[in-house]
Length: 420
Ligand SMILES: [Zn+2]
Image 1 (cartoon, rainbow, N blue to C red):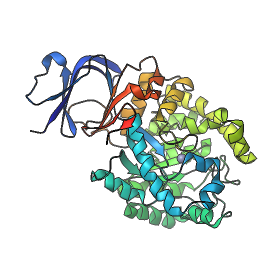
Image 2: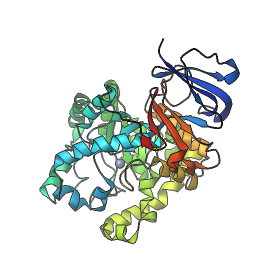
Image 3: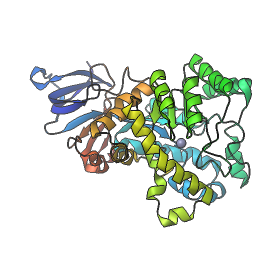
Image 4: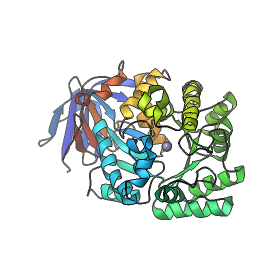
């Protein structure tokens, strides 16, 4: 029998019902949860490692569904630095550090939505147990249409832009989806509108792809066991993505009621990325001074629309996941700040935010058969919190409150420090 670690007499969040379960014991055996129930019904085996959970609060490991592991926050503050002072391989290697940092905040699953091909090998190293890091699920390079990025600037920037291999037409798309699959992608990332940081002529109100192209992308991705997530800001670009069967809309900034109704009908998820969307509200004068004026204009527009759209969508039943768009607005691993914004800007309760960051995110990624809730048979990804976050989501911002983080039954971090 595998070794058992037991968290006794604790309270935990049932992420299906949002009920607090009290005086419960959780038995971890190998990589999984083998038993959960009232402490009075637990029978201790000789050799069980006991963790006294009295007064603690346990939740499933968190997800961050929108991460770019190859970049640093400072890159977005100074694009020139990024493309003139570093080799391309720097971007491959920095991802190793970024990925690991997520564990200190209890994020045991990270979804990459635009990054380099080498991330597939980082995922393999982690899966093989050769490196400690979160579970990675990756899109690798975004599939982009020509015209959303400028091809000027330092040579390295042009090359980086072209790494996304812009494509056109159904044949181009089919090839790109198959190529991502061959490179090791778990899902496909695309953009159905322009973006804030995508260049001077990239307009957040411009819809990209035609319906036939988008539908071909979704059908081919699904046929190959993947799904599509789409960056989208304006209502038309979002609607086109939802109609085509895209699984999650990233940012999802400007929504009208018709599109929200369609999302409910199609079961589409929203990844809010509020920390990126609202960055301009919190930016310092120095940070603003480094941004081109057209980027500031786009960002102001996005930050005004985003919270209104998401709050309405949530009220009407669109499932929200948890995703930061790190490191656009802050350095990696600020999932705790994003959680606070979901309370402050959208009006969710702390338990609803935790549900978004666990069960709903797991469903979006089709991992809910083994992650996102605390029940027998699931993988033992757990956070032991020093206190119940029911009335205060900011407890995640204090390292001391994240007493233990388990990934697949092993402790990977204690009080904000990696377990080595
Ligand atoms: Zn992004």
